[in-house]
Amino acid sequence: MKLGIIGYGKMGKTIERLAPQYGFSNFIVIDNEEDWLNKWSDLKTCDVAIEFSTPQTVLSNLSKCFELQVPVITGTTGWKDKKEAFLKLWQNAPISFIYGSNFSIGANIFFKLNEWLAQQMKTQPQYAVSIEETHHIHKKDAPSGTALTIEQGIVSQFGNQLNIPIIAHREGEVVGEHLVNYNSVEDLIQIKHAAHTRDAFAHGALKAAIWLCKHPGTYAFESIFNRV
Image 1 (tube, rainbow, N blue to C red):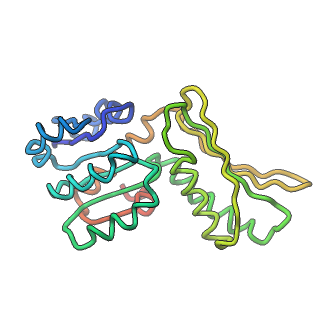
Image 2: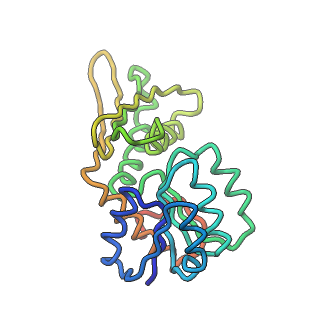
Image 3: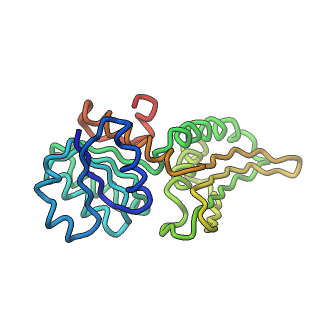
């Protein structure tokens, strides 16, 4: 199978390293506008593409994949405010697309745990909820897309009236840590997810890529992670 890799930073290189485990033997790497000009026709021959770029380039990258009708996975964060309008623009087009704030299977299990805990805690007003996230100093968006997904999961149980503080830390080369706190005068309840390496995100994205080739359509990774 042939894989398009769009964005050749740390995640792109990790995906390239692990992709042969999933049956990908050929790669097209696109990292800038010059690559798009030179490799446009090559990308069209890919079975699927995986996109990890920047909030500034993600919309353009996805639009080009849609124009070529190449199924695409994106793990880029920081464009949540534009996502719904973008998907509406393409809703009648024959696209195959999976998007997610975090492609780690463990993180997506954590999302479900977070919703369950929020359901239990909504009847316990003595607890104040907060979210903390820590990432490497190169991460461009704050709070992280994962933290915003965690917030959304809590709000889905409590209602929109809840104001949840999100504290973002940028330290060294931390891959990604997320902590949910329920604090009261009497005690503290915490749940945490910590990624040890970027391999977790790459494995999830590659599993999603294989799955999308067999199941055309538009999906949030959170809704299909346990099927890939």
